[in-house]
Structures are given as structure tokens and as C-alpha cells.
Image (tube, rainbow, N blue to C red; front, side, top):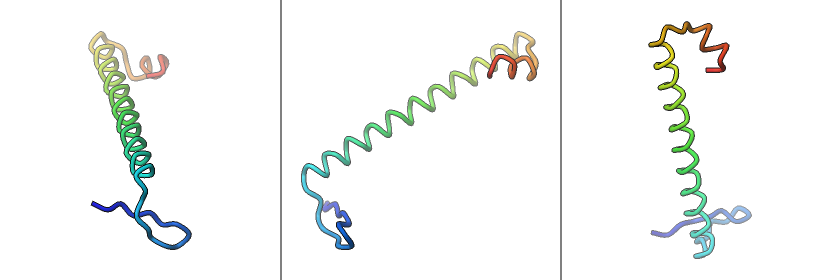
Length: 65
């Protein structure tokens, strides 16, 4: 598969270094997205546990959740 890049208005094939950089950026983005999703899931789980203990929405908001 040929990766193309627009270089000053002209499409050209990406160099191996550019492809490697692109793949690294994509991998890092996937890691960051997973970390964000995990943090959100943990926050929702904490809300559910605290709600089960009887805390109200106002209590949760006061805690920053």
C-alpha cells in the first residue's frame, strides 16, 4: 500500500521515515484514547459505587464527579 502525502500541493509517496512517524503517531493516539476511555470508565464506576452508597447527584458534583 502506497501512502501519499501532499507536499506543497503535489501528492507524492511518503518516505519510509514518514511512514514510520505516521505509524508512531497513530499508535500514540490509540494509547491516549484508551487511557481517556479507561479514566472515564473508572469515573463512571466510582459514581455508581458512591450512588449505591446513597450519595446524591449534588454530592457527586461536590466531589468533582
